[in-house]
Length: 393
Image (cartoon, rainbow, N blue to C red; front, top):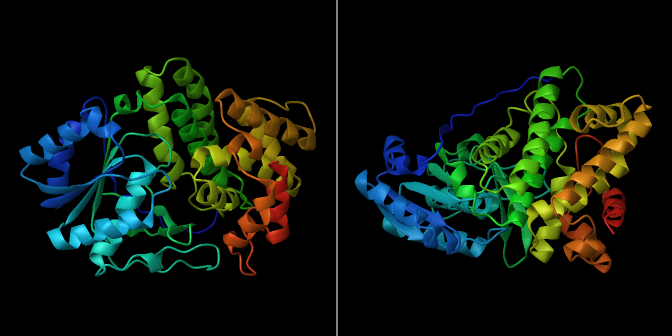
């Protein structure tokens, strides 16, 4: 295990009707005038935004609102939000939605606390060290999609326009002050969106689990336990979208997958996320769907680096490869992972995703490795990334 620091101050209000506490929590964490940030019309049509507004009013919290967040959140809306926050004297960001809304709110929180400047903190693989964020307004979350884990993470990923590049900012300063988590709010999600969320949280665990760091039995076991939970509960929730307990287990799994409790003290990979970000930037596909295509291809390309690690994944998470050699078990585990993704109705190839083979050179170029390598498990050069994209065909 490597040395580490870990600080996770997010307050969680979990359970049925928890959104009624939103105003109280904004007030508790210093908000007097909030920017209420959300996505499309479903949050309004369902009555959730109305309930949130009532809760804010009851707690004496003033607010202005900005909707319209799209998947793969756009920098133009962040710019609009920063201008609104500065003009209105906002002191708190309240995100109602999933990872895209939360990441957009984090961008606004940076800009509103730094005189409008936020873009320079969002960088890609061309830099090895992210610029430190000196200040950010506090962010609170009412979560409606179990997927990205942004409700407790240090990260924000957005689509920078007009370049159409997905780039990330990060730091403990971006961890939300609170997260309201009512599993009932996820019951109306379309099956495909639920499936994308499952793939996303599973990928967050894989990015930590596939590590060259030795003697990390605790976090190995934590990763495997959460992965197994995601797989087991996925069958229940896809069969019955109104299964509260399945929704609850999945929602909490998404948080644990990305608040870094499973990644402390170990080198992490993140190659698959970097490779996928170029797909969702170019094609505007769902992030989880892109990961369903990329991650098995990445596994196929790198497993021989440490077949024993992949064999453990196969045996302990999917229960396959028992009694086989590590090399054969590794392949069995990758096959089981593919079958699970397919059972969720997710794409497994470029064709199913709507991506094109002729765009591979562009995807590699916009990843902008700039001579650097990608990934902590097996460092990848541009030629490796190209090969992984070709395994997605």
